Image 1 (cartoon, rainbow, N blue to C red):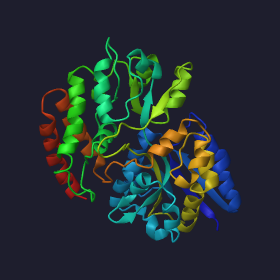
Image 2 (image 1 turned 180 degrees about the vertical axis):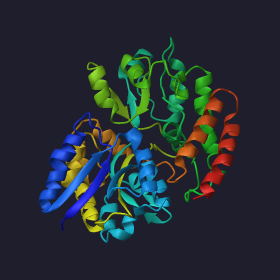
Image 3 (image 1 turned 30 degrees about the vertical axis):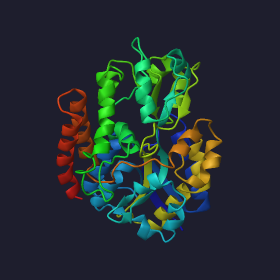
Length: 388
């Protein structure tokens, strides 16, 4: 097998990700397939979506893309992807290795359009000393314990801080409380997002906010103390954040030793949110066989572990023990991935999240009740979901 393919990605050029890809992973693939060339094109993450949209319009897409998980259904609907569940006879071999949450991000209209390339989720990251100073003997592990601990903090300090009110921020509370954003088929929000368990989760946070037990950061307010700095300084006792928090904290606060705990659990369990990227093949690829072979290699143990050394968590549960051995804090995230869920897989996600965020903020600001806000959001989201 020989030929040339192009691979678009948004690996960070500032760290070791691009270097490992270009100096180790791709050269190893090319050695395994003499006569092949993989042209890797680094596209900053904040520019990738626009570049993809432009590429669709101009017919100038690459063969393989490392795509943010929320963009896969959109690209599938546009007709520019080849469903891997049909293009790769061995698709199930790879699918069975994946954590369910990351794998689900590729499913749209009954087909799988890609496979998880790397993943992440969020867990509770906390400051043990800040809790102890408030007389809280252990980090809250349930939503009820979080609510009970909140009044014990005082003097401008908070037991918990959240940095926004979008789906990425609030869905873990809704899911853990037993609520949902949509039906399982992702066809309607009414009866789910505005259902009693979803509304109750939002109401709990609003009650804490009104009692001045949550900082204004939950509204995405700028100028205040961000969750990461606040936890390190002890202003906030805990936050829910991803694995990137650890290298950031180590650089800025080398003397702080952050601890981890599962996302606060409720009737639905301890359910966090899935992030990460999928690997997909374009319909316009002139060398689909080589593109598929490159995808297989990127999902091989060799490539996955090489990228895991740069901080890219593998979505393959079969590699859990090897990945967790790389960094002490990885294990908490890999454990949380076993129950983590993806945001609804829909081409309309960006619009849906915008509606949800704005209505949630209206509720926090007292301009709507939690029920009114979620009723309004569900009514606006339903027509978007109906578009498929």
